[in-house]
Image 1 (cartoon, rainbow, N blue to C red):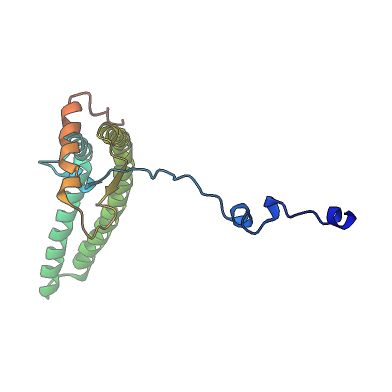
Image 2: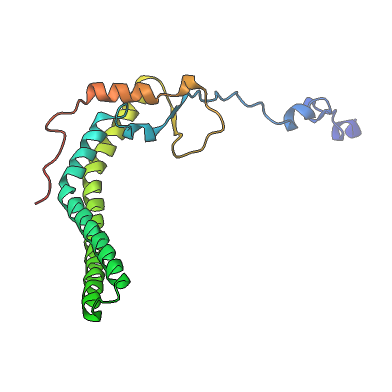
Length: 199
């Protein structure tokens, strides 16, 4: 009797049939996968003069207008340089041309080229700075409008095909024309669109 008490019968927890249930991996609940709707846009189309975003054309016109005087001056300097080059070539072909006369023309041409290069570099720096001043607010405006456009249509991802090369994209997911039309309708070009040029 004592031996029987010291060796109790096996309990269900220790039985071989119960072990697999205790050591097997727990069954995980299924996790729902996110659903997404993707679209493609070609932002380079925004700059098209006829079918692009009208505000871009307005800003470009304003920018070019502000720098028209500088461009005209540089064009005039280039024209004078071409005229001087032609005169120098003619003087060189004429054996009777005094050396001092020829040298004077050459010096004038060299100085003109230096002045044109300096003015051109200054104008380019000023142009780039002003371009950023005008375009940054518009780019921010377009970015916000594109976000609103996407959310209203349940679009989760937009790929800019002008920046990311695509092997294939169905026309049905191209929202370029729809967005441009929507933006132009809601943001017409007015006199208040442009800002006052710097003094």
